Image (cartoon, rainbow, N blue to C red; front, top):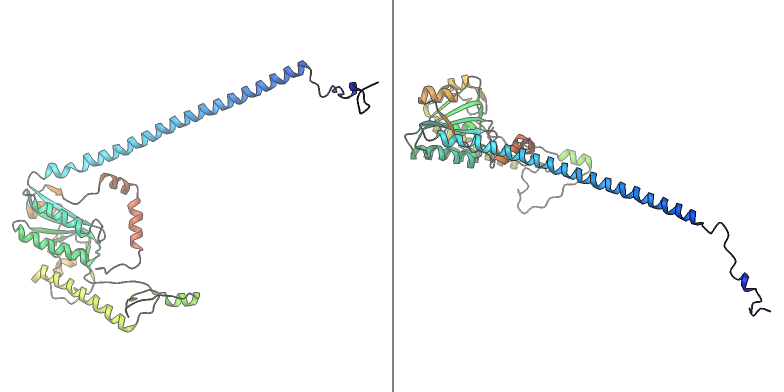
Length: 346
């Protein structure tokens, strides 16, 4: 009789496992072989990926290195090819050239800081026989132009033996002509554009547009005319009259400086100061230009020295590289469409 309190046979308490749950030694060995083979495949794939990653990284380092070597080579070429010209040529008798190119504005290549720095270097060099201001600019800030005009007069008084010649290439208008008027003589090509002695202040008015769009303009000011020239506010007649006075005053300053620089060479023509632009050939007849001629012509035939040395301020090698890549073009286009520009001589 069994002592099991449940009245069951001990032999039946743990029923034997079926054939499905029990694996034979052969099956176990096969399973281990498959597992080992799978791991080997995984290890092989991982190893291959690791090798490929290392190869890709080495090639990436290689090409990056080539890129940096190329960039440094370009920088070196700019430095060693362009910079030594002034040092090598300025130690003998020569004609100094200072370029005024592009819009005249603070921070630009044709701005007062850059041009004045170059002019001082040109005048200070005892081997420079004369200075040519080579102009290709549509104009710009009357303030920047006035700074250069005054500096030319100052340097001419300090170095009376050195004459200043302005040579206009494609265009020497407005603020650019303002600068040229300080020179002892002005030359241009027969097809150059010269003059445009006037002042302009331009903008847009969006008052009717925002009303149609249902937009409300909210602007708070302390001062009755603090919002003068705001494009979203109507321009009152008294404000228009005031701003016209500002333009007229600046225009008269421009006229006075041109008359002081050109003197009796200017013809008595009422159109001279109306903002019109003339060809170089017409400008000679009006007294705005002394004669026709290029930079090399003035150096060779007028001054009597053929060697020209460029004293214009140059960008750093890195800036020249960026300029080559076209970034400066985007910056210039952005400046052209800027809002709220100051007065311009055009």
